Length: 193
Image (cartoon, rainbow, N blue to C red; front, top):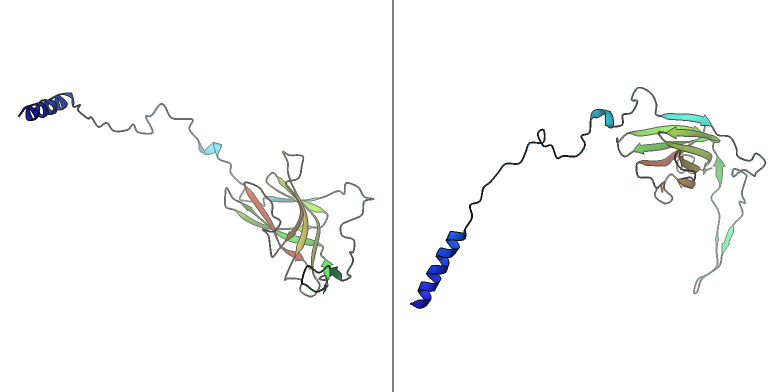
């Protein structure tokens, strides 16, 4: 009986200490004075939809006496040394031809805009703040539309070092890709005429 009296006394003490819960609605965003800075339409970058976003420019050679990367390379067979348990194998390089330019595709990840543009070898194009320089474009002699190899240099106007410099391959754009947070650029094909 004593246990019953103590438990009854504890229950009443618990009820006496209970608090009332009040539900209050949240403030409306229009009347909330503690929010951060507001963003207006003027703060969002807009793009000129009337004209092209790509500007093509002549690209001067840094050193006219330097050998060009467009010089012919050896078309001789390559002999690979055999590994353990393998036989010697001869591989013939694919015969390629030079093209006067390339067709590239640029995508702006922020706006979702996709642009295809042509650049002649030795020229550059500007995509917003990026400058894309095409030094050379090569394609297989027997299948000009099947593959393209373009030597590109991509620079950001705000940085001294190039963001990308090297060969891009049309069939494998991820093999050697531009690493940029906003833009993607890849080769579609060489210009054959």
